[in-house]
Image 1 (cartoon, rainbow, N blue to C red):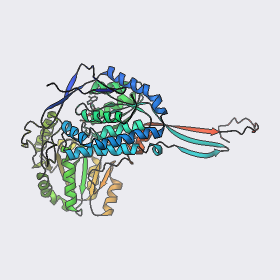
Image 2 (tube, helix red, strand yellow; image 1 turned 90 degrees about the vertical axis):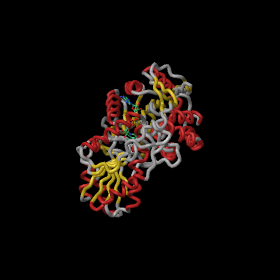
Image 3 (tube, helix red, strand yellow; image 1 turned 45 degrees about the vertical axis):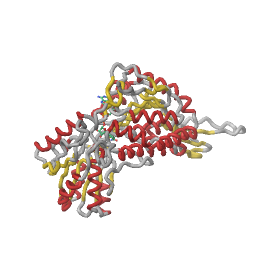
Image 4 (spheres, rainbow, N blue to C red; image 1 turned 45 degrees about the horizontal axis):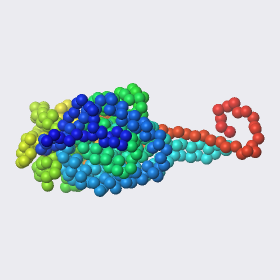
Length: 499
Ligand code: NAD
């Protein structure tokens, strides 16, 4: 039986692509071919952008309340279809069902927040800035915006993008990861059911060609990108060179610092969950543990806890972590583990070649732990994006902060301590955009914004929250004076001053 094809969404219709090149969507645990996805070129991106451009004037003119109602319906539909969304997500991406529900849920929270567009899009007003003159600022949508998403959160990250862009009055072209496009397509179907008018959301598929066509397209005003550093830099440079706004959220190396006064049980549970959950394929995964002073004695406890985790297909009961996304990723992670050994790090726990009954062909790597890691080693320098934890040891909090700040990435970090003073010093001095205090993965809720920094982002404004309202809108200021019919003419004002 041939696998079903993944459709495009253009102008409200789910249509077959005419692309010449296709790839398979593969279940990473079983290697079953789930679907075939087209690798679109510039011609199909043009169709999607044209539909979005046609839809823009009417959607921009739709009232805030009506736009909000669409997203109120969408949030209800996502809740109603949570089980199907999570099962589809686990099937194509590999993460456990519980984590897949978390992936959908963190995106759902953004949809809920989008429903508050009435206050989010509100402008500012200053009365009587000069005699009888008022100034006000209004936030207007940009036009056609685009989103390019990674494989690791196929629900949450598309939902970071199109709900906020569209509720603010823009129209949108989404290009999901070609590795797991089925979940984003379910979300697009739900958005149509929710009453999003034809052309407001369009979906194309593919990889470099589709992305480059988005970067170059003269009718696209803004691009949201989430993915790896290399591709993100390319999209940022190519998109901005064409005059677009681009926000690019990139890769990471996230450190968690453990002080000896931390609540040890809570801290170690948090570490093991954050290092190995989702098989380490989270941009906010804890990939480096910095043990301070006497906390260095905790290495055996960390290893023992990691050994309790069950590696299995994501839909199997009791699975704690599933497979990596593809065979290439597995080979790369295994190679990096080999390099860590060669470069002299101590392999405390080796997760290579776990036996997973019934899924012998799956892309599995189990929890892996290195101690004695040095900054020059490959396992420290590279984002491994697998279930591999590097442990480093330092004597003081000041050294720990210096170590974290010397790393080029700035996505997330955390400190575990019972000392408010130590936590406050860390929060103040650490040069990382998202900080957790006894919280391992400090991804902010949607009233705030995602604020990864330094090597983990390009562009000033981050996804969702207040920052994305500014990203997806122009601010227009109006300075207005109204005359009474009875007003008499005064002198001509030849200065720039308002009187
Ligand atoms: P990726 O960069 O390979 O792919 C991201 C997108 O770019 C996909 O849609 C893909 O089709 C497209 N793409 C791939 N190669 C391309 C090319 N040569 N030219 C143009 N476009 C191309 O990333 P990924 O492997 O899907 O996702 C994992 C990465 O994403 C990790 O580095 C992770 O840290 C990062 N990430 C960052 C955040 C964040 O918020 N900072 C969140 C999630 C993931």
